[in-house]
Image (cartoon, rainbow, N blue to C red; front, side, top):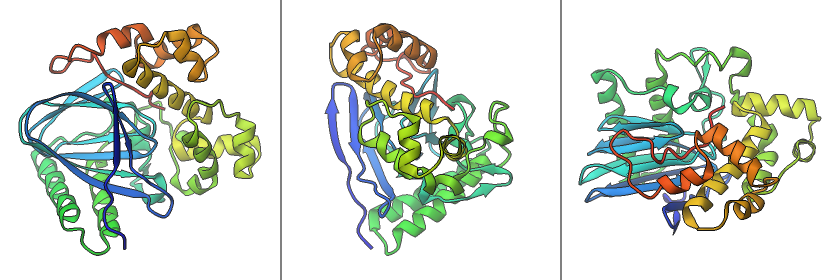
Length: 313
């Protein structure tokens, strides 16, 4: 069993680009960070799914149109290609995160809720830790994950998967998906293996416009079958998934450069600046120009000045 890997980090402006080096043979990353002092807002996006637990201190977590404070025993969920931010509020804050490809968890269903539905819900409607008893349970799971990270024990990947399942079950217990996620649109991990080639097409070049026909052909499926399987597996349409990836790239470029919006629109695969403007406003809740302008002042506690954001399914 290979040791726990360290990610490759590249900071461009306010955005932290993290390569976790995930593949189908190494589908999970386990990590922990300790911040000795308060820290300004960081923004990150990656193609994998992220689950985090706050161990000590406090952070302010940001998504589209939503921000919350994470304290010890709180957990957060981030979907694929979903930009998210965090700001360290207290010195000596520590977290532990698990970043993984969907196939790592497999076909698990909690009651009648497939696990991917937890991430398909809008950030503000995803399950959160509520009772003190649940908080203690989540904190214990976080400490166990931290031990796996620090000691790099044999078979750590299997241990992480078991603790991840316990965590997802704990936070989802008693939670009901929002009405927009009907039973017919629940994410179904069992079909995931069929759409992996399409995910790779988008992940390799997120700014390229990948046609549904091209993605379906890569998966060996008819167009209609591919669209159905993708929606069941990921909780959103293939077109929306591709748009999320291109918007994430555009959002990062707005923060990292002073390029004109029309230039960013073109390099991100949009028809023109107006197309980017409409898509950005609909899903991020503000215009590209407003997003860029308000990104530089730090948000106040509970504020949403940088709720960076892939849209929820």
